[in-house]
Each structure stands twice: as C-alpha cells, then as structure tokens.
Amino acid sequence: MASITASTDLARRVPVPASHDEIGRLARTTNQTLTALQESVGRQRRFVADASHELRNPIASLRTQLEIGAQHPALLDLDGAVNDTVRLQELAADLLLLARLDSGESPPGELVDLSALVRAEAPDAQVTADIWISGSESQLKQVVDNLLDNARRHARAAVHIELTARGDQAVLEVADDGDGVPEAERERIFERFVRLDDARARDDGGAGLGLAIAREIAERHGGTLTAHDGALFRLTLPRDRRSTWD
Image 1: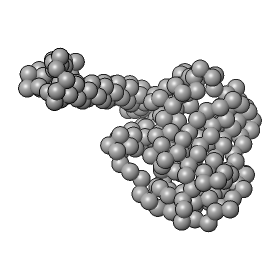
Image 2: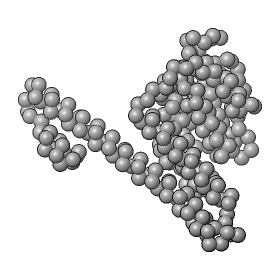
Image 3: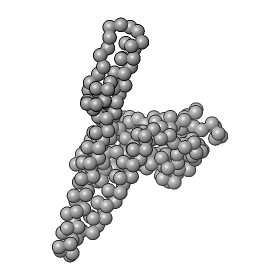
Image 4: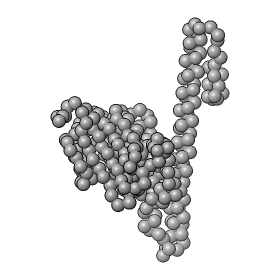
C-alpha cells in the first residue's frame, strides 16, 4: 500500500494471498477500495475535461467579439457578447451545483409545495392535487425548469405538463409533440454533457447538463426521472407525510 501511495498509480493492486484468513479479506477489500477510487478519479478527470471544453467555446467567442469591438467599435456584436456571458454564467451555476451534488450534500428537509411550484413555472399545467415534498425548493424548481426547457427546446408546437398524486408518490409528466428520444438513447441522455443533436443544442446554448442535473436532484430526493415513448419524461418523488394526502 505504501508503494502504491508513493507511485500514485491507482491501477496497481495489492497481492491477494491464497489463504482465506483475515489477511486475504483485507487484501480483497483494499483492492475493491482502490478500484472504486480509480473509477472516481477517472470520472472526475472526464468531468474536468468536458467542462473545460464547454467553457472554452463561449470564452473564445466572447474574446473575439470584444477584440473586434476594441479595434472597430461599430462592429461590436453587443447582443452576442451578452448572450455568451449569460451562457457562461448559466454553465458556471450548473457546474457549481453538480460539485455540491457530487460532494454528497443532502437536500434540506423543507416542506415544499410542489403543486404551487409547478403552477408558477407552468401556468397551463394540469395539477390534480395539492402535493408537498420534503427537500430543497430551489433544487426542485431547477428540476421542473430543466424539464420544461428540454420540452420547449424540442417541441414542434405544444408542451403538456401534468402533476398527479399516485398513492404516496407525486408524479410529474412533461411531454412535447417533438420526435422524442430513441429507445436506445433513453438512459444516455441523462449522462453529463450528452447531446443527441450536438450542433443544434450547442447553438441553442445547451451544454448537455440539464437532464443530468434533474436526475441527480430527483435521486437525492428519493425519486426517479425516466424517459418514455412519446417524448415523455416522468418524474416521481415521495410525498411528504406531514402534508395532507387525498
């Protein structure tokens, strides 16, 4: 173990003796810990590389616009510069939230009126019950916002939102009249920085983080977020027992 620590080579493992005693169990447990650590470091390195790539494009665009504006003020694309700045701000906020989620930060046990939250974000939503959730209001708001943004981004003309109570579960369904997600891609779209239509999503300002963040927040609240046929996304969350059930 001292040799592995000194080398910083997380691919190395300790030798496992043939005996089935406590030393053998310790060796196997140590190797499992090293494997988990190696995978964690690998995920962190990929995340840093992806984040750097996403940050590079708007920064380069903003610098180009400002350099042109400094030399030729009449040619400054002020709207474009503002848009790139907003995109950087939103991306930085998403990365900070992911860092907090990765740190294992648990949501506070606030009593959140999910029905009111959904109505505020989508006044045309069908809300069939007063539903309360235990967790973070700001994080749950971000889940709803991300799902609505995703639906509006891909809809041809219409987006449908419905919040219902099913036993001890709150179920929020967001669907649009777009093409939907191919069945083979319905898990991959929840991975960080994944965009099925990369060029269009990049032009629209998406970094491929919205659905990943939404799922991680849902899971932190004891729920699930899944994609289904018909461009449908379904969020389920446990209803708070302090609220009045139907």
